[in-house]
Image (cartoon, rainbow, N blue to C red; front, side):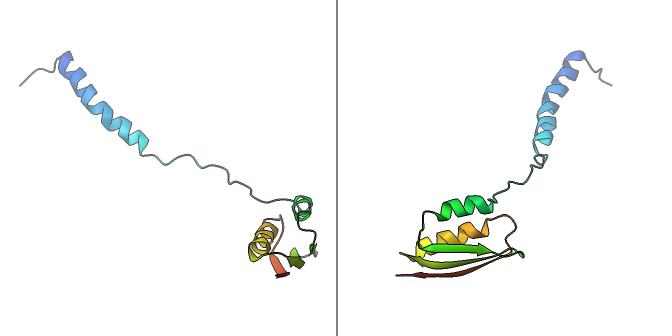
Amino acid sequence: MKKLTSASVVALLVLASPTYASHDLAKPPAEQAPVDNHISWHEFRHELGSYPGVTATIDHHGVITLAGHTDSSPEKQRISNLATQVRGTIEVNNLIGTD
């Protein structure tokens, strides 16, 4: 039977250390708090000021109705996407017309 020397113990520890380190790295990252991408109705109305031909209303259920006219479909889509980010919104009715 061979004796276990201090050098062989150190060698075993050195060889085993990457195993322990890689095991620690395999743990899933700690859960992060969800990011809130919502904006307030006031912030939305401020952004809507860039589009003087468009109006917006919100009812007590959280339904936003967009009306008016924009120069292009991308503008219409941008306004609609922005409206969906308003805190408490459950639906967006986009009645905006384009050229």
